[in-house]
Image 1 (spheres, rainbow, N blue to C red):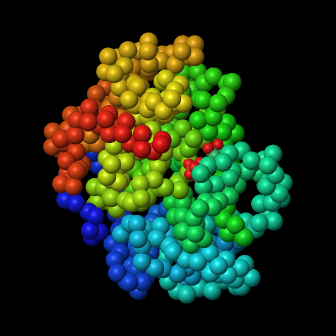
Image 2: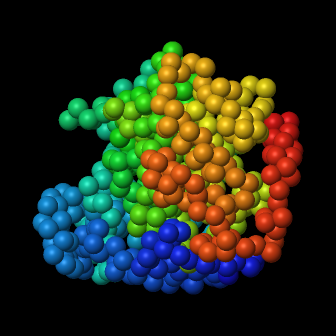
Image 3: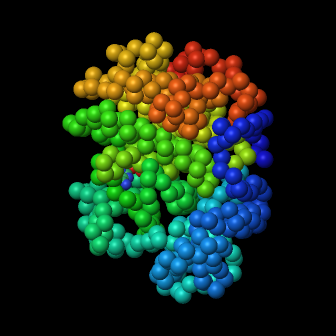
Length: 471
Ligand SMILES: Nc1ncnc2c1ncn2[C@@H]1O[C@H](COP(=O)(O)OP(=O)(O)OP(=O)(O)O)[C@@H](O)[C@H]1O
């Protein structure tokens, strides 16, 4: 176990159960060879735990059907899809493994370190060679992804024309594109100029590995990827852009009905990532810019660049460096680097506040929305809190959103509800979070006595932290 790990205790009850079962993670330490064998174990363990979702490819390159459901799915896969799947498998199998620094657990691809040159060389080979099967029995996820060439992406985006650029984040430029069949796509070109090639490739594979396992209407949908010259993800296009733009930079005013629908959708997406996905995924960067709005304003959680797998049996993990967006970061994360579901819950609370108030997580005078809103939430002061631009709102929904926000931004992670409970609160199925009296998934750390951490101390820390990062 990583030395950074402090005493942790897991107490599960059914209601607080937030990890999927039957997922085997391998702890990695030591040399390359250790890691490689860990990988093999990890992959073969995935074979059994992922059977119901993904068709397997056996040593002869045929679809192997483990059960009836797999058989049905496999039967639907076209020959070219199988060939793509094999190319994908070959690509991953050929990658070089080294020790993994940040996390001591390597899920499918989140631990690669490889030289970009070597990746490109291997990829170049993939395009030309017949697929070779090495007999390793592991699952090929989602064989319908496409491996695009740079020419295809250039044709789709009019040579990455600036007119087609729909967004730019800290790590990527995003272009609107149109595929030959008329499908609109977003081509995310990874830039991360400050990073070394190896790190960029590692981050790309990590994001790709996570996003490729996600299958939910409220989470980004991967169409394909390209590592031809540059690294690209090809995603479903979001016609209404990001929530941040619509909420803070647009003439268009989102009415309450749409805002509430967006809140429920994001909550459903997060519940999926935390509890229903093949593996437990912590997004780590839930912000208004990372919520995309599809047709009919259905929200999609996007940008899995910081997302992490968390093994089922671990209550949390401690990471360094701490990356994320100021204004959305939970105190235990920005102070101690603790990663667990409740840091996403905190960020979701900030998002709820943005939807209620129309204010940014951090405004132009560097005021944190959490610090500003806390007293009004405690007084249930709707008049001060609610966005003055809203023409009207459903009072019951607004109050539910306020009480959910209040619970989510609690300074103690154990007191914050999980996403399942947040949805119940928003839908009025349960009005109050269940008080934590020792049951449930408790987070006990001797490294940082969070239970002694008061709301006032937290607000002071938040202020201090903001001063530091805004200097
Ligand atoms: N699928 C999409 N459809 C439409 N617009 C998109 C899509 N994906 C991203 N965008 C736009 O591009 C912007 C940047 O994308 P994204 O957040 O994925 O980049 P990033 O560099 O990883 O961001 P960050 O700085 O948060 O790491 C988004 O805020 C959004 O406006």
